[in-house]
Image (cartoon, rainbow, N blue to C red; front, side, top):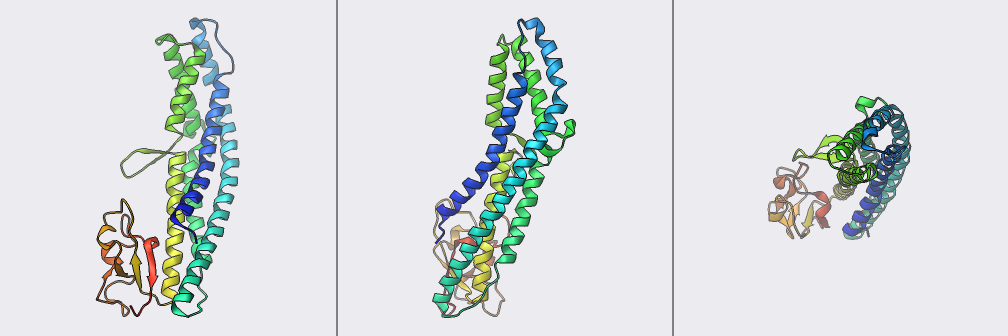
Length: 284
């Protein structure tokens, strides 16, 4: 059965591909910056002018590389979500069939398809400013020009060699990643790898959660045991290791002996999550 650790490995594998895009694009910037050298500080402004003029060419090359990686990675993301989503579906159906002695054919393909569509669109949004060939709108061209200008400052005022200035600025950019222009709830700009992790982690968890909850509903299982886990969400803490209703108060199947996940924000951002439930028999 797929464990939390298994899902984390799947997420890491998918996210690494987007980290590889960042690496390839930052290597491209380094290659462009290292074309040509200077013999004296006096030549640095000529170097700056020549390299700034290359921004159009770099933007076009970056867009081509980003588009290629995006198409390949989205295919892999789709394949992984479909394969693992189907495995989750098979496992929960076997578990529920054994628990209830019923044989219900649940539908998971639509759930998987919807989540694949959503994450694909989200990732395309995050990569939009890399695929745009228009220099003012291309994130990599902007990084390239900023590093070019900073290298001039480092050489003129900082006394660095051009090679050292390029290397230092590239290393600093590697640590920051390539910005998507999108921010998290704290207002911090997300890098491509960070944004992709957020999207993919959400998609994997949502697929797992939706398939399990749909299957339990189809089998008529309306009670679950909420798992105990470290560093739980605030919404999860009161119901950890508790039997809970998987239906809202007021439902015909509601058992008033137990609390409901819907009393703890299920289905809302930051609320209790369906992937934490182990199904229990309705007659408990």
